[in-house]
Amino acid sequence: MTRFFSTLATGLVVSFMLFSPACAAPVTRGELAGRTICMSNGDRNTFYANGRLASNRFGRGTWAIALGGVQINAQYKVGLLPLTRRHNGSFLINYTYGHLGSPLIVTGRYCG
Image 1 (cartoon, rainbow, N blue to C red):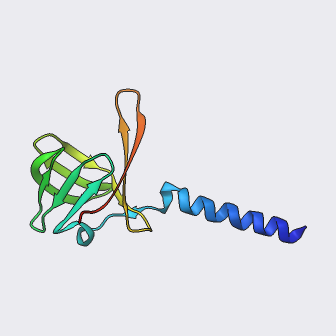
Image 2 (cartoon, helix red, strand yellow):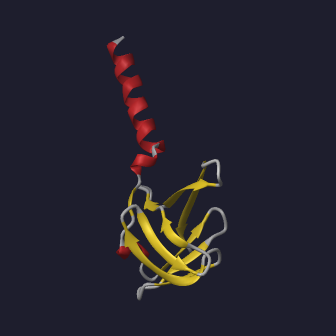
């Protein structure tokens, strides 16, 4: 019986670790500079090493690492992009969308 509860507890801990947004870590400049990230919603964001940004959603502008994600100053967005890096190597953006604050989770990977 003890073995059953031990196995059950281990399974619960592992499942929380795999599916929890808390498993995401802050993104670093080294992970973004010179790279393009393709997101699950069709966004394609190129973070140039010189701090320039090119995005099919946000337009052209600049980017910098900030507390809570990436600060974007672009044609169609000025503000914080809450981008984090997951332990499996993918990226995660957890938006609050619309006036009702509906959550929208978008994932992505390096393009190509």
